[in-house]
Length: 448
Image 1: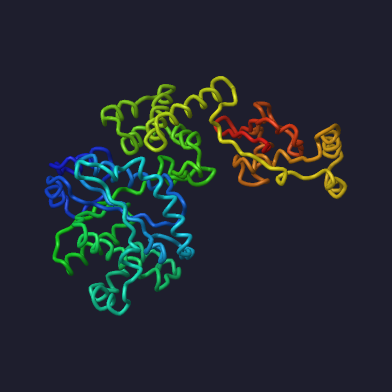
Image 2: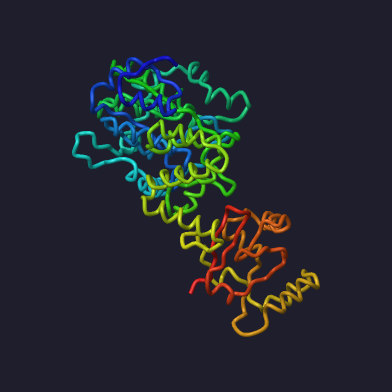
């Protein structure tokens, strides 16, 4: 693109790689020359936390505020009851009102780290919930006043719907209404708060365009849409996923150390791009760090991990995570900040079950088992395989056994070669360290 922006916000979006498409570059750019404009992004409450895949949108709202404007974080208390069908193969499970409220409470915790809702500078952010205007809609009135502006033919042509139908996968009438409700959100935000811009991922393009068209028809107001690219890593994986599942933003679902480690494990080719998108380091510095090669790029990855973690969890948490990583990887230690799994005796098997198990054990396993049950305070046991599953280092018992067979498992930095190893409760009175490969570690211990 050769467009040269005038406003600070559009300049940042283009320079740092946030911009995928815009309904009217020049019109939006000129509108944003006036400070204090409002823009929103909607977040449906489908879980108690957002994950890394949403972080690019959160950073866009942050930059919007940093360039003098008023971001709106819109919680989808109403639209979550319908479920966004965009590019999904099946319908989302329906959640109760209580589940949605709990999810919103969890999601809200993240935004305070990135966005200022109490600024006295005139551009304080707003957090709203679309249940405020969606929950009490009169169906017939809504159909007459809003539904008449939508063409079913046009709605069917949007890629998010068309791709589902082309695969002959069912699309419920409930889901089909989602794009109308999201369009109505934009109309209400413009009417109530003068919001001129909706932002989102490129998969939301059709929904955004619908909102712009509806608002122009009903209110005759000029408003705009802007989308970010849907990010994948350089090796083609969806951003926000790891081999252990989603990279959650809430610290109670994913520890600051694990979050830090996710960014430290960024592939070399993604470092420069991620520095621009997920940190506030100057673009020239991001380019310099992203161009490093060989062992030098590892220093850039540490900077990336520190800066991203500091924005979300605070500088102290980022420094603690780096110190733990150094202790674990460079010195072979345990590390104070490793994710810790605390077990109770309910996780163990009482020795009284031993006779029933004996027939399922090999002679070697039985001898090892009996040996570990002798002596005092050895009334309960757990398998090493179960420890790796409970710690999250393996997805299943089969996965743990494969890890052991491939010499990728360690206990207290010692190779684990016996998939039948039983560990007694007394051994877990103090934490033991589990390792899966060179980069994934956890501590496990018995409660009390």
